[in-house]
Image (cartoon, rainbow, N blue to C red):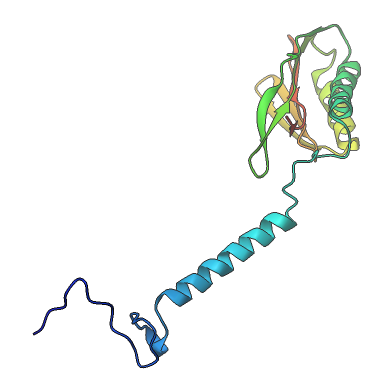
Length: 178
């Protein structure tokens, strides 16, 4: 047994290159790992580049136009149901996250109104109006309350709850870049 000195240079292969631990097929062990890492990096870069991760508006309208479009849906729902409404909309935007972790803002609405003359008929009219507007509509009966929820492809959410004692309309606009 013979020991090496710490100051001794690494041994050389027949080609004169520094000795490396050899893996299968005589290749250095670190090379496949480096190739895999490079491949993963390239694929990740392509996914990010092709996904359009640049910060841009979720829809091709301005922030003001998107907010006005959302408020028009809510105002139309009030008109369809009828009666007097107490508008309690919050003018302060709420934080939200757009895909790829971009911080955005959405605006909430809350409106409380008189009970509809016919709860079932009002729910059907709203279902039809939101369906005609291209929203995904779901209806849930919870005891004597009917809830109609509309979700747009742009991420807008509107929920109407109707009962014999009151009507409540709430929702959030689409998430827009802050």
